[in-house]
Image 1: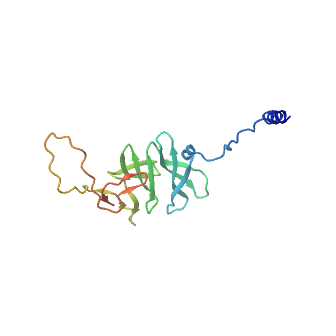
Image 2: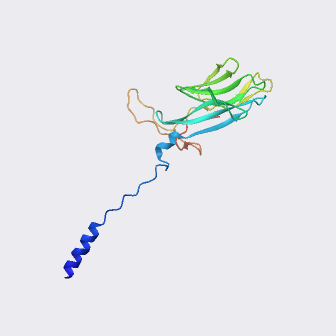
Image 3: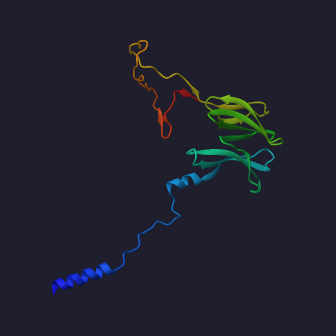
Length: 196
């Protein structure tokens, strides 16, 4: 009789339908969604105050990085439109004191440039090609000069006391000499020696 009860209980348990697997709602943030993020950054208002230039940052899944474009919006929040965009990354917009020109940085195909956009003609002019790009652009009060910061590389320190490498020898890479407290950064790895 006990065996019959055990078989009956087992049959009853197996007759109960299995519960549906728990599924996450589709609105949860997944890793791939990072490429769908967009945000506005670095708003700049010209002297007349009628519109705002800003940097629109967005993820590019095809290149696995964030890119930037410069957009313009009216002072009432309407009529968003791209001002400077393309395959590169564009940023640091700065209006000239008279509002007739917009300086900005451009990084395209490993080339960093300092440019000026003229809204009346919708054209840009390249002022300089810079090996490591520019930051913190600022116009002089008369609008004739642009100041900026740029990283300048310097030769790395060398290990002392190593014998000279004979001609044709195949040696390992020389040791990396680190003489600074900040020598590495998340996402960038070892930082090149130099100064801004």
